[in-house]
Length: 321
Image (cartoon, rainbow, N blue to C red; front, side, top):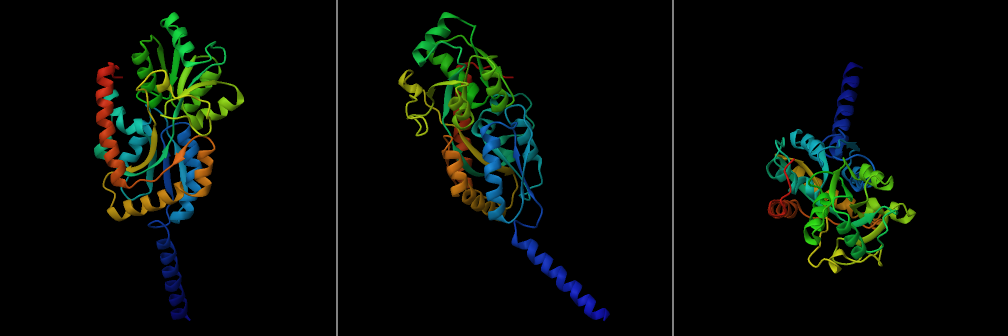
């Protein structure tokens, strides 16, 4: 009897071990860090992606928000995590290509302390204004700002973010005097714009789209080279300021030191989840485009854009925080 019980316990342990191995190494959940508060495109995309990623990889995926410092606070948690694949982060390009040139004493180096996994989302930004702003077009807005030097405030999702740098690009190219007001994410920034605390902002189309549809903000232009399908009447900003073009991207990263096999497995299932009909459709209806790169492609993009941002920040004279 004792031998039978022992044999059953051994079989049960083997079955449990085999079941655990079916999922992403072991059965422990994966934390998907979003270094911004709820309400922005990062959070929206993460919560659409997480269930599909969990189903594909065979482990539960839990979304965690840790906002602050244009994504640096939450991303630092990822950089310091154990390199076993159970802590990954969803970051916008600016968090890993601009922060290091704008923030003093950053606790990690994006190019050395993070493992690129995949670029998964490309989104245009849109120039939006509060409805009380009388300008109905980009030329009218530029004239309005020039007529009131220093009186117009623009919101960003953080120092060094795409929304901040594009505001600086606009000011430099059009020779404007505006005041930059940084928030901790798209949610707070859009709330401030809707409340009239700031007059304009550059924001990711997926985050701004509901506010545009409801009439709470007015869209004047897109930062992409062509009008997005979701807003075909929205002109590119480059039409009025030749050379102004920027299309932000989002990608997933893990801590440096991840074993190659784990990197490969994460990439496979991240790309599969991002390209699933459920995720693709959810983002496309709000202006985003899901994609899937290799880890090497993302790492190369990070290096190249980091150098571009270093030069832009230096030439624009943007002050280090």
